[in-house]
Length: 557
Image (tube, rainbow, N blue to C red; front, side, top):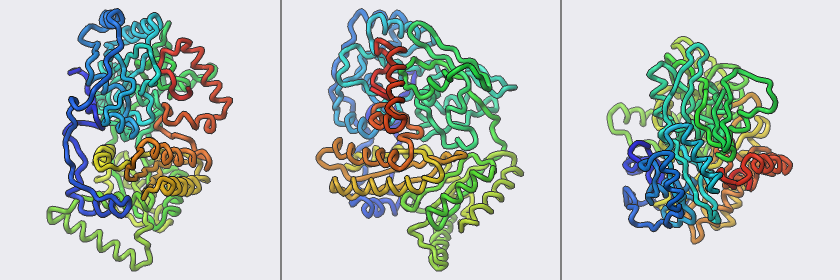
């Protein structure tokens, strides 16, 4: 559809954007040491769609005519490539299946509704004709919340909200905006910024994900320390269900029974289609600065992050990478080209040497970043306060240079997965949250579980982590792991990813902090929310959707 932006069918993001390592001299040696993999130059820029065969649409002519009557023929498609774009998200498992052309069950038709009335009409048809409807935002899910069941025999409709992409109103007194659910992050921010406002929500997937998708999966953005998670940002919403639209007004707080707003947040399409949201917005900050710090050890870095969270110093985000992730980050630095950059690189090498002479183990050091926003005077005060806190944990203040580079490249990391898959290598992520008292324990447990899983599969693997998204009682730990693909990629992945997820709950963390559940994480739901909690969710879905027409099988089966 020319009027709706989509990612490329075979991987992440745009066709002409790729991860390059030729200009990063330390990257190939790092990968060789970490994974035992010899990198080769990228061999292709794209994968022609003609190389795959797609199962035909099962949508009958009567169903198609009914859908066309709702949204118009030009907004109802059985095109094979569009159906593949909508068949799954971007988890490693889904990327492997997509590249191999293993499409067990693809949506039969893609519908692009123009408004809430058309969404309601599609859901009415779904109940009347016993169709399956899977809401689609940007397609960035990595928890398999978009993939249909391989056993589904009914006609599957992918309901793409991409045409519903406008900021409808801004209440400048209350700091609330009413926004359609299908808007992509950059388009939404552009509309808000022209009025001097920002949502402040920037997940890794920001450039390709939607506001409705964030709400449906309980997303968290990089700047949640200041702006909150999506559950804090959403104040009201409209949710279309078969038989009626639930309207939750944007009130600051209510005491009107169990929270329907909370019930719909994270529901992944199982309770209805979120069409419109009322969200908190903030004036664009006058000044913004990201400062980098280097810590001598992971434990001292965590202590510093905890101290910042306790201090009450307003930060936009505060995050720190462990030693493994710090080493990875340093390996992705580009070769300096100009004189200034060469002098900067020389200065960094000299700094590491000085640190070693002072007793630092540079293999144990951890890089952190803290973002400050406000007036210039406020930012300076906050920088000074945080510098005092981190120095108590032995940190060096590296300044705004590395911080600015991090800020520029923060949305580029997902492209690395496509590159690694071409290198016959898996690179994937998994995240959790735990109390401050258990963060170090969770970190150690996940490392140990991953190493055991690597050994059991005969792999030379790598795992790394960072801490982000601070709260009063705890924080998020975000893990990345990698290994070379063997003869049975899906079985290997199940063992290694499963070991990481099990370590989360065994050590006192949650199975997911912001990636949602889908089907990827549903096996751990009973351990996370208790068997009685899972039964309550099953009962809720059964009553709310007795015909199992709304994205069935997700969260709990």
